[in-house]
Length: 503
Image (cartoon, rainbow, N blue to C red; front, side, top):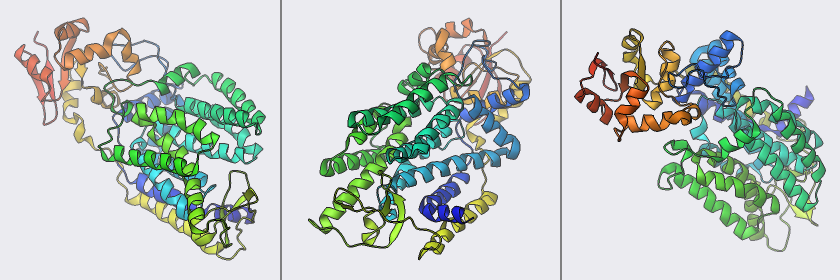
């Protein structure tokens, strides 16, 4: 019992931030057009008690083998829905966001006090907000942050942390193809340790074992394909395109990038920071979906730079005065001093951090520190009752479902509506949906784009796939072109038109 209380005291600030993140995330409505087909995939696997290996949802790629490497992520997502409807989905989402926040703050607290670690961590958490969607990608966000924190602990000499990275990556490999990021991160730590000649053997051993282990997971996307999935980008998909620096999100990323570079120019960057951050920056600049990972890793290194800058500016040539002990670990494994007006998180004398004891339940001020996360988590759990996580259906053609279910034939649908139709009208296979990769074959995606934008050869696309109906947005060029060709309006709403080919 005392051990649990000590752990709570040691991790009070990360737990408090995690509770705040949970409260925000659980109140968001279920979102993302891809959520629907992930749920449908999980539903099929739970009902049939087998893994989904071929396409069963489309009219264009039916029976074609495919694997996206997120089988267990989809099953867990559906089980959350099965257990609590949209509230269950929201709780799963909020729990993963909370885990991410905890790990980010915990990693930053290895370098700096809460006054530095929490604001910097908050920026990284805000940058992760676009990934707070109800799909398996959220597992990658949380597990990446956990793995990074474990590897920092391993750098400090924790053998348990480096050993724990192997089963974590194995579990991750069946949840989402983003596990390739974790494998790459582990290898980058191993390479840095090898170059530094600093305890490289445990990292190299863990990297080799993890790489072999994920290849044995039958639910995982093969590592080569997973790496390609992480490193490639598809034109026309917003999250896979470079960020717009003039948007609020892009401006925040630019601020983080500028601050990181400034901190390294002023203080200097160690080898680990360069080895890990350089490839993550390349990924972040190529596709905005990778920006959160760069921010998560940058935060601890920037926090350390802030501490060094403040120390130099406040008392050049001399050590700052001692202060009460606090929470956190230096990357070497020694505990930190909260110290010096809560700005300096650790102090260096004689080339190493000053060792002080971790705060325990018997230490002065420990009890209020324990009460803080407890109170925040009580509030976070209470917020579940007031949340309305039901999805906003205004963006989808809900009113078209009765007419769609009452008819047959191949329907050409809007890309973003494919998942919604898979979940709500499974009896009508879709032309295309957000799974994307199956439709790169046989020119399905290219044909869809030619048809939807009325480009040369668009009628040939409809004829090739024997399209008899089209469910489109009213302002689509194709909507008017089909009506000009004599297609009949079967149903109409503010956001959709269901057209049928004349017989």
